[in-house]
Image (cartoon, rainbow, N blue to C red; front, side, top):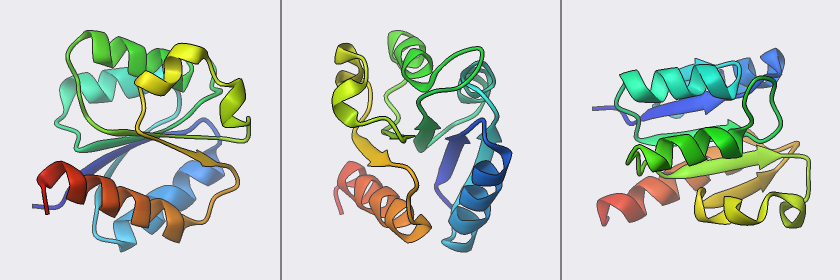
Length: 123
């Protein structure tokens, strides 16, 4: 079964590019255009890993991950943003496993996902 990745990104072009690239790498990709939509998808579907932007309308990526963690969702998460990691909310680093700065290379993203899923699966 293909790993299911949720990509949450408010920039339509980035969302499309990441989705296409990850599908090319063999992942099943679900998408959401903001944190509120991402929360809905993560609550209704089994997700193996979450890739989320930080700054988005309605609900940012850290707030979305905080809500999911408080509900018991332990899916690994990658936060992508142009903001330096040191400027993310202090509690945020407990909510995600990896920070990738934007703009990012899709190969780097896919390799990071592979690595995280391998660690989780104990490969």
